[in-house]
Image 1 (cartoon, rainbow, N blue to C red):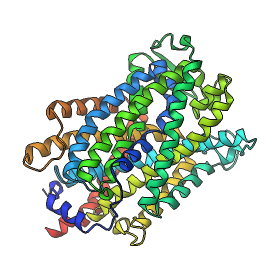
Image 2 (image 1 turned 45 degrees about the horizontal axis):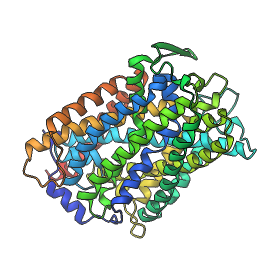
Image 3 (image 1 turned 90 degrees about the horizontal axis):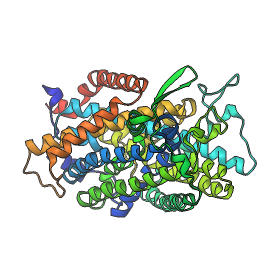
Image 4 (image 1 turned 180 degrees about the vertical axis):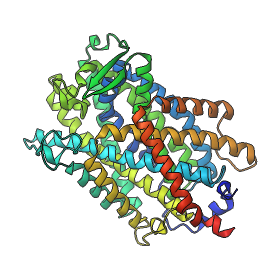
Length: 486
């Protein structure tokens, strides 16, 4: 069946030779891209929602579980990156191993992952930006900082800061990958320093009573006619699923393979290094945060309603260390920009790969000869993300991002195993050890976390995938370059 046709490795190699992208990214720039994407929403935003709605102080265990699930996927990504060092990430890997329809579904899932992730980060950035303005005595009106679904007033409302930050990031990205990487490197140094500051300084204000009980008894949280099942073992698992979005960064490294100087060696290194570094930091920050501030105080309807949007900064405020909150707010406001930058850059490269194959319109694969970037692609993508971020609540976006991420990770674990069986003689500069065990573990744990996402997120995400299949048969299949060659 033509929908299961596979793109030959030779075709990928031909694409690499005629690629107009500039290979300017070294080992540490790639690692910084991974760290830049991973450290952001997970530490500065989702720690609050994860602790209150899911795991309580046991959020650290949620991060460990999510990290373990990522390790399995990261190893599989690394083997693929050593074989097919091209833009497109899991989409390209599936196209070269399983078949076009499978690759399309993964690519459509990656669109969900990156687009929703970018929107989530834009909304998160808006929360920290508003807090930063308040520190200087400036308060924007609620109708300019709140999406319509969350706005309690009357008349028009939008999240203007979220809208504008997306446009600002796009203006950086269209100038070129090299300049974007330099900006990202600077921001990564800044926010890693801020995270280390949070861990060290926050340790002096930990109240061990906030960890008792470390795993709260399972209960239900009723909020605006919505019921959340929280805490207990189930809460830890659902917490791992909910904060999984925070780990999308190492996936973004693989989308930049087309611009790496030595992709077959450097991309696997950067994927694994960025994941390990950030997992350790996540665990330590979650322990410090839930030790400084009781998990129940992250209630958006309680006495600290804004703590859910900027939990780390508010934890220091409540501890009477406003000066520390000031430093963290600045670092988070600047730091989240690099997360947004990497996610939009990753999304544009996935579009680029799909467009080269004819599955989406050719406008997405046009490269500006001066900057070496898919400029039109970035502008279209940025406009869409900016509008949705301005009018959509963060909780809906984060869970759908986690679904897209978990789905892609599961598919990569399946695909790398299939390729090892089908083409065992391919040159692999990195090989997953004990592949059957690693692949099966990755498939099971990622699928289990997907099942533990909210039902609403599952339904919306499955609906998105169903739409994707319709689009494939109406447009993608007919315009596929492999279809035309046949």
